[in-house]
Amino acid sequence: MASAVYIFNDLHDVSEDRLHPIKKFRPVAASEISPITAKALFLFLLFLGGGVMYFPFKNPLILGLVLFYILQNILYTLKLKHIAIVDTIIISFGFLIRILIGGIVTETILSQWIILMTFLLAMFLALAKRRDDVLIFIKTNEKPRKNVDGYNLEFLNATMMITASVVIVTYIMYTMSVGQTGMTDNGKNLYFTTFFVLIGIIRFLHLIMVKKRIGGPTKILVNDPFLLIIIFGWLITFAVLLY
Image (tube, rainbow, N blue to C red):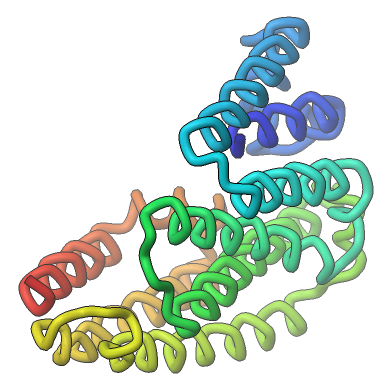
């Protein structure tokens, strides 16, 4: 369903993407995939995703969340992404809906802290992408997004700092909410993994604010050995402490 949404967005924004220094390499914008093929794939994934999500579980709550996910993303593509702040909220809700559906499907009790952390971390990364857009506008004097006027570096730096701080606090609370998540006593020391989260966020901020890295959170992540080591250390430590 998420892939269908991305295809819909690429089809709608193909003209703007061709003017963007990075998005111009997307398959539709680069004419590697024809609009007809993209539309066919969009419909195929939409119906396949809807069927996979509904028929095995037949849970009306799952169906409602999926429909809300599709609706908000269509509205995002058509209008809401051009409104500053609202665009980052919609992106964050998208990731929140995913984890809620995952909890329902796997019958996993979700701590209120991981719900908050998911939303805040998604917003932190969305703000980082908007910061990229502002930097591109400053360097090229071309607007990669229509809502770039609604942001500036001072505002984005401040909001990213606030969001990063709250993410760390909610992560600490999540690791300490062992009883609420149904974990065994093995997870009582998970708070030690906070060191990796703190260092990882500081390193990410260092890369975009000091090193002036541009290219989106994913590209920055996979191209920085320091961050990869931090994430690998977090995974190993988390697994050892929990299991």
